[in-house]
Amino acid sequence: MLPRLRDPAGEEEVRLPARGESGPLARRLVLSVLQSWGLHALLETGELLTAELVANAVRHTGGRTIGLKLHRRPGWLRVEVRDSSRALPCLVLAEPGLSEGGRGLHVIEALADRWGADLLPRGKGVWFELKVRERS
Image 1 (cartoon, rainbow, N blue to C red):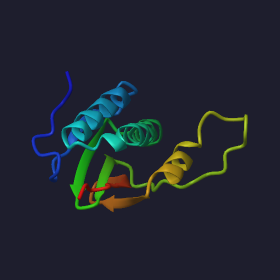
Image 2: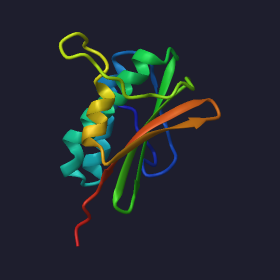
Image 3: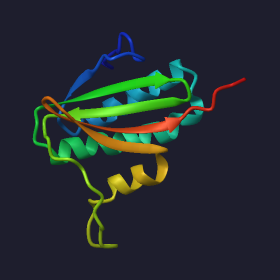
């Protein structure tokens, strides 16, 4: 069953297990929220970038759970994945053809309008932002 955000525009966070099956769950949740907000132009990019953030959190942090937050403010959508590690992500140069890993942040760098990471009292939040083209 798909978890629900009571107030997806606010500070609520959905907790998911730090396991591979949380990737598809997080993607469906983001798609559901973006559709409800009428942000159809951001569906594909939002889903892909969410998948990358969740995969990185599951693969690299070793925690038991991750958090997913969505926030909308005028002109912007922010998706954030929180985990218990305080190790900040960094772009690495992946050798072509040698590794399946190491490309997630490059995808985020290429497609997001902004991205970053914030240290939190217990762990970190890695986020991306997409510009929302408001209708006049």
